[in-house]
Amino acid sequence: MEHTILRRKITELVDDNYVYAHVLYYFGIRFYEYADDTLEQVCRRRGLNVSQVVHSLEYALQQKNTKSLTLENLPVDLIIEFLRHTHAVFVKQTLPYMAHLVETLRYESDPCIKDLQLLFPLFVEDFILHIHEEEDTLFNYVALLQKAQQRKVSLGKVFFELGSKSVQHFADDHETHDDEMVGIREITNNYTLRPGSSQHLKVVFAELKSFETELHTHARIENEILFPKVLELEKEVREVVKQIAILN
Image (cartoon, rainbow, N blue to C red; front, side, top):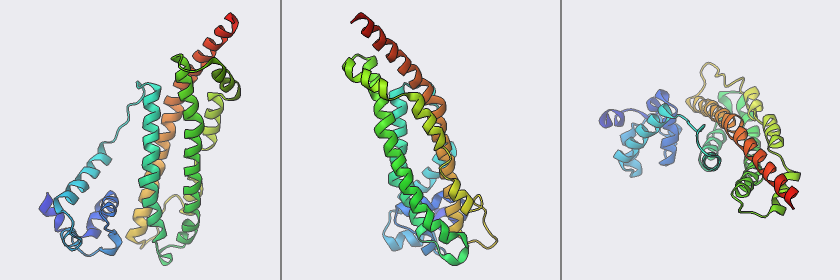
């Protein structure tokens, strides 16, 4: 397998699967700069460990094809940690890579590119702000509920937070932000490629579609798994606080 893939041109690899472009980017290889070179030629030229690059390409493809999620039976704190990790991957890896792809597109290949280059940075900024707000408000509130359940926090603090926040409010607000990529879909005509579109644009559209799928999965985890569990947790804590208040 290693010898076969090494003899293939970069453009051929990326045509086979756009995921390869992201792996090559990690190694400092911009696929659109080495389109007609073989993988082996590029690795030698850049002083890269050939076996490591090949292994990373194979592993990334395997992960993409076998990714599955089974979070329903996990406790709330582990679901929160999974979501935090996903946020970190979005912010530190996925979005910077996509931003680079969009920024380096050439206008002449498609009229939507200029609009995409204007909108995408705004989308990224808004998306990261939304993530930070979610972690600072919802996730911290859930952590407080868990501490209250374990009797590790003062009644006064819990009483105040229960009076000013509710999981249902977070859930309702979350529903209004679920379709965050609608503007990008409109600009790209639902990621529709024109005849003769460059490989670069094909990779951009593939990454955008993949990211949107990941966002839908992320939203499903929050809406269908996290929120029902946290609503029950909040209900339990409210009842405990109510009983303690009656006794006092």
